[in-house]
Image (cartoon, rainbow, N blue to C red):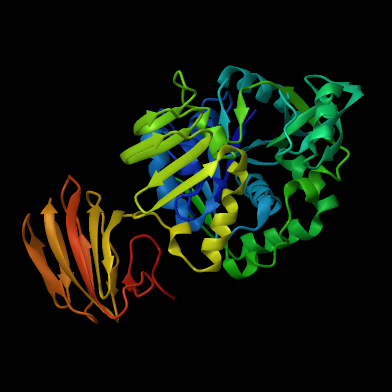
Length: 480
């Protein structure tokens, strides 16, 4: 039986700001062991029995970053496919797009395992056993969700109520889905024994989920189908990629798969499981991944502490000192520091909303920004000037482009560069440079086998990243 894990990578994770940002969201956050959540999800999915391909649904701007993260851990060279959304349209649209695409490539009898890119599962053996049970139910036409055995009365999760008198082989029939409860209700749920945390993970036979979607959410399926008809499908030796058309995708209803289908269908089952699951939904959850010291403090990075207890500090770039404080979260990044009481970990999202309201870019970008060709790091940003450190991967190339409002001075620090500067093509070695005037078409290429590192000094009236006119690009980013 063919199994295709579908990794949903669409959330930002605003509760984990300032590390999680729109261009570097929660799935890409490095954990204490060095891997990030999307890498762990890919590995966990690809190791399951029967997997023929891993399909990832993500934002089109994150394709190359996701590809890089997978390449770092995909030593077995598992087959990959991508569906690229121009913007988020909720989970019903993503599931429908994945199901329709898999129906055309693998047929209606293939099974899809829907996984969130930003969840952590510690017991991989128990997870594989739960997936096996779910696949058996899905083969019989059930829409299967994974119910996490609750260990405490959590008020931040939705719950699944299972029918006590309706056992199935390997699972239970679902009576209803319940919204996030208050504390008293959550305590009652835990005591009842037939309520489970809703993990947001699912297993379906492709034909079954499409049949149920057509019955309960026909507007979603119809709009997604029309979107796919007008979208571009490309294939290469590396992966298959469906880039959804933005204009058509905007007509798809914005609704979750729970509301659109799972709460309406009579064919929903749950597989209760204890798999060491966490949605890593706050800095409190992240802190649990680090062992505490004798004072209950958990530290990532260089931290000194005096008379301080039960704190979590994440500070990789500089020394942090705590004196006489308790129960704090301290998250330090090169351009932003967040300090919160542990009891208010869920409220970090309100700071992100304030940043959006005042159009502050720190909710969007880190100082180091990933691009298909490499990275750039903003070292200093002043009035009429900006200094960047640019790293270009071997054999990679920036677009042929032009700026209206700024000039640029490039100095090679290491490696070798081929530069198109107006009508000239130059070869620059270490310690050599070139000056590019505003209005000149230019391009930067790395012909070597090691990273090209250079310093870029920008000067001009306007230094925004949107002052780019692209003429040619290897990554499909040419302006229409």
